[in-house]
Length: 245
Image 1 (tube, rainbow, N blue to C red):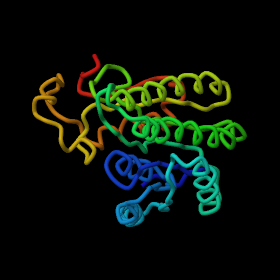
Image 2 (image 1 turned 45 degrees about the horizontal axis):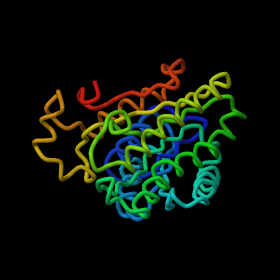
Image 3 (image 1 turned 135 degrees about the vertical axis):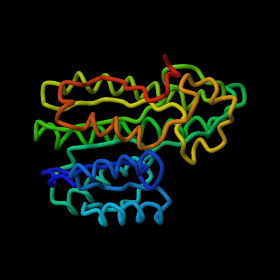
Image 4 (image 1 turned 45 degrees about the vertical axis):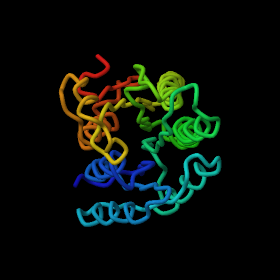
């Protein structure tokens, strides 16, 4: 466990899968971590317990990132609990509502856009306030390979993730001179609950011929948050076994 940092970190959708792996990785680097969850309180508390057992600090924070008030709620709670500004934000929370475009409903479209794009925008906007004051900060957006290449049945998810990549690049150039980096990680098929139904036929399209692990995604986020990545901003790091190559 590294020495504790002066700021804190917030990871959304961190009760399981990729988000939980990212939270654990950041905690090992000394960041006090906010573990955001929407409904899985047991999962979030398990992640907190694991981090604390290893000597780190963590706090479970309930909020639906699609709620316009969630950003202020999460940041206020974390700033109060750790008495430090949030200097690392990982926008990981996401949902999918798959269907072919001709039959994709307005509700399914709006739910995915609200959670996967509007939520990260509001959290990024709120995060930048203390980061700009501190002249330091790291924002990492968890996008997706489908934001880079087509995947039938995911028009809403692809639009949200492509939009998240565009948001990443735009915000990055706006704050680069203030010591803040904004990057995206674009996972492909990762072995999580969200991809539990992936068939062997789909995996055969991956050049590496396997699914990735949450820990492999977390390792990339860990690098982007580190001091060594201070000259990396506006980048999209694919973690997809070559799928988008």
